[in-house]
Every structure is written in structure tokens, then in C-alpha cells.
Length: 357
Ligand code: ADP
Ligand code: DP6
Ligand code: CO
Image (cartoon, rainbow, N blue to C red):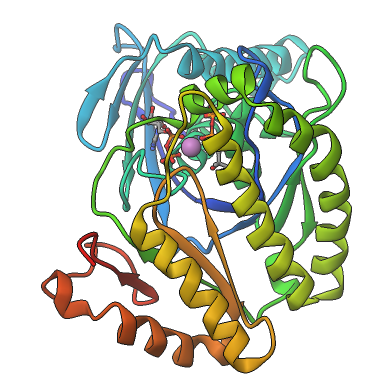
């Protein structure tokens, strides 16, 4: 158990990776509990790619809970942060009340200081809320020595965060209950299941914050888009079944086609939202065209794109095709066009593209 002395802060640091959905979550049926209108499925990236690092310290001398995000203090009273803190403390208290004597000296009543850093752009459509809240909940669980199914708590921080609690291929089952107890993430297959699968993040925009955040964007979509309702009720359920099968069979063609179609339909619902939301830029559209031309050239589906709520492209492909596809990208989007810049902190398989192309 960390933290023997009462005054010395008890400190725990953890990291969590982002996940990129191939069947997208967009729309809530319950805003407070963060319950979605459809199930979704994602791939969790490796920790050495895009990740959040969070340190939580507790001490009896702390006067209040506080949080710093990327070095800047943020408002701890934010309802989603409060939900995560409340739920973890509730579990910790429950364990103590259930009579685990080892927990007597834990100090759940102690305040926490949270310090979190993303090594990639925050709120830019690269799933910072997913890695961020998954990391927060996991780190808090280590500090308070809480175990068990934590995806339901991460979900209450940000919906997509529940999927980052597991590695590999993960589904978020929407659930049926009003209290959200059955709206949880579940691993479909571990990362070792399909080791040839690769992810390439093409950074199309260096802009930090997207103009319409996921939370408010999907709210407007739920209120105004009939296409979204149709998608959630009549399209996604069938796609979830097919996607799980494609992953289990390691059928790249099926995986890739479902991924692209789902990304396209998600962006179509954004356009069907009123007023419309544009997350794709002209460079994103050029990437889409490049992928289709590339696949047509080889007469098979070798590469798939998907875009979250932002213009940056996430490309899925098999290892054997990475060098050639990277060459094609560099040919059509030469690095010189943005001064040869690569986004700081991103690993080698991230290719930076320029907005001006
Ligand atoms: P993204 O596409 O990056 O997920 P969102 O609009 O979904 O963008 O969420 C961005 C918000 O998520 C941030 O404004 C912040 O409130 C929260 N967030 C991002 N990173 C972290 C983090 N490391 N810890 C806690 N909250 C975070
Ligand atoms: C397009 O999980 O960021 O990335 O639940 O309001 O925090 P909140 O939204 P968030 O939405 C993610 C939307 C998406 C698709 C996905 O990740 O499934
Ligand atoms: Co997000």
C-alpha cells in the first residue's frame, strides 16, 4: 500500500493510450450518465503512440481537490471530473465498509491533486478525452486501491474513455438499463490477436482545439439529425456484428470497408446536423481520395481511413503495406510543404500534413 506517513503525499503515476473508433459513438440518450444511442468498437493504440500520463497525489494536508491539465490549472468542479472522483471514492468506501482492515489507513477523505499531460494535441479530434479520463480513473483506482470493472466510471468522464480501459479491440456495449450499469466496455480480442495491423496518424491540422467539441456536437446532432437516428437504430447494430466477425477472422478487407463506411456515415450525420458541423477539411478529403485511388490501383482494399471529430486522418493497414503507402502519402503531401515539420512528440509512424495543400 502506498503512503505510510500521514503527511507525506502518496503519489501514483500511470499512462493510458488513446483508442480510435472504427464503429463510431455519436449521440447520448442520457447526458449525465453518458449513455450512448448506439454501441461502438475501437482499436486501442500502443502506449508508445498517443498517450496521457497522469499523476495523482493525496495528502491530509491538501485543502481541496485540484487538477492541472498540460500544466494549466482546470476547474475541478466540472461535473465529469466530479463523477469520476465520486464513483472511485464510493468504491473505496464500500471496500472499507465491507470490512477489509487493510483499508483503514487509506484516507479516502484526503483531497487529491491531479496532474495530467497529453503527449499529443488536446481537444483536436485525436481522442484526448478518451486517454485522459481512462488515465484519470485508472490512476485514482491505484491511489485508492480499488479494483474491478472501472469502464463504467471512465464512461462518466467521457464516453469514448471506457474503451481505453482495455487494450486491443474493444466494444462499448450501449446497454439497456436506465442506470447505465450495463453500458460497459468489453475486449473483443487482445492486441496480440492481429499483430500485423498498423495505425498511421496523418496530422492534417496543427490547430489545437476543434471548433465544435464532441460533447456539444453530438448534442446538436441528436436534436436535429434524422439520419443519426436511422444510423443508431438501423445501421450500427448490424455493423457491430460484422465488425466483430471481421476482427475475429482477421479479415482486413471487411474490417477496412466497414471502417471507411462508418467514418463516412458519421461525417454525413455531422453534415445532416443543423446547423451543420464540418470536421473534415479539404486535406482530409484529399486523403480519402488518395486511399480510394491507392486501393483501386492494387485492385484490393489495402488501406482504410477513419476520422474522428477533427480533420486528422487515422489510417489502418497491414504491416506489409506501410512503407509503400507512406511513400504515396509523402509523394502527394510532401513534407517540405509545411517546412518539413513533424508534430512534436509524435512517433515515427505519424506523418505531418499541411493545411495549405
Ligand atoms: P478529443 O477529440 O481530443 O477527445 P473532446 O472534445 O472529446 O476532444 O474532449 C476534450 C476535453 O477532454 C478537454 O477539453 C478536457 O476537458 C478533456 N481532457 C483531455 N485530456 C484530458 C486529460 N489528460 N485529463 C483530463 N481531461 C482531459
Ligand atoms: C467521434 O467520447 O469525446 O471520437 O462522451 O461527450 O466526452 P463525450 O464525447 P467523446 O466522443 C467521441 C466521438 C468520436 C467517436 C468515438 O470515439 O467513438
Ligand atoms: Co473526445
